[in-house]
Length: 121
Image (cartoon, rainbow, N blue to C red):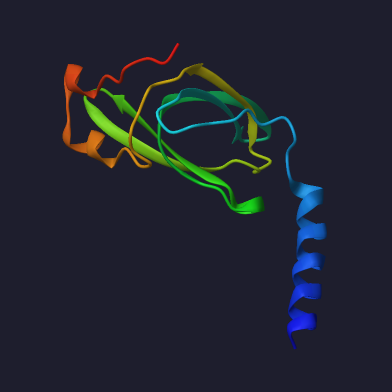
């Protein structure tokens, strides 16, 4: 039984290797990133950019996800992105911040200048 499960895990990893992207930068918590997303409008496709602070990250093979937060017109908006998704065209790291936590959910309760993070050089 154990042999079967390890064999099954190896097969799943081989299948996932096909879909993994290799040009992904090392995204950390607190990074300000700019994501290029493919948007379909009618029969045309275009790239729309989404820029914000990474507040959460989960690393698990093909299901690697990040939560990006930005403030638009005074309202905080958070989106979850699957990094290996074919909809993501580009990822660019704009700034890196010095943080002491694994998740920055406390930014939800802050407003204005209080949401600024110390920049890492």
